[in-house]
Image (cartoon, rainbow, N blue to C red; front, side):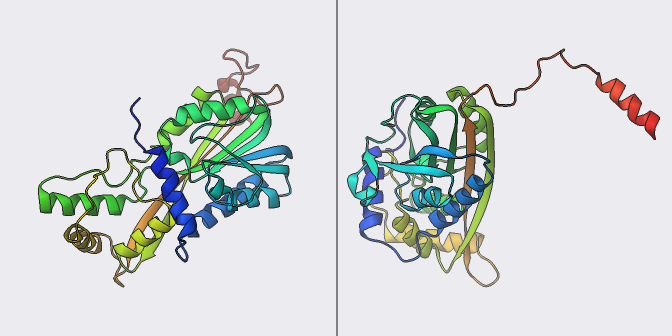
Length: 291
């Protein structure tokens, strides 16, 4: 499979975001980490060892540690600087450095949408988790940055007669449940949390994306820098199509949450067809008779 993302560039983008922070650009990581806290809070059990997979931020691991549900949290990052002194391991992108059945909980926040082999990473997580272990991950899904994508395509088509790929493709939520099942997870749950952010201009959005490490890491990205004319026209299109009455523009982040458990005898299982003791027709007749 040909890679979509330049994995080394993904890491460099994240390192730049760490070393050249942009004030306020961590808003989405904070928001999703708060959601992670809520979701962990709904899980009625404790975990001995948890791992945070390539989130490129200390916030998710801190959230897991503060939940009171985990004895120890380890981080995995593609570069030692991203660990920033935390307990963790440096591992090549998309490679989980864990023995089979060694983890109780695996989380990943805003990282998996830039992985070339997401099915392979999910399969690795499944192998690394113990029976009844939990995977809980959030990634950007289809619809994310749709306004920016459209504005750049329209502007570049007007100026040069064609458009290069400048915004990454994002996964369709309808595919996520199937990927979890293919990886061997039981009880898969997938849902989406849309987040709409408002900016003064498109350039303020791009500043935040740079501070998040989210500027394009596509293998097929143009090697020639975009012109000022392209960005100027794209900003005009953005304001024309995606502004509110007060003149500020909208940006959409569609956060896909997925969870799955490693199969275990204690988990609920659907009944086999034909094993029910009463038919639906009998139940309906009883209800009618009671009215």
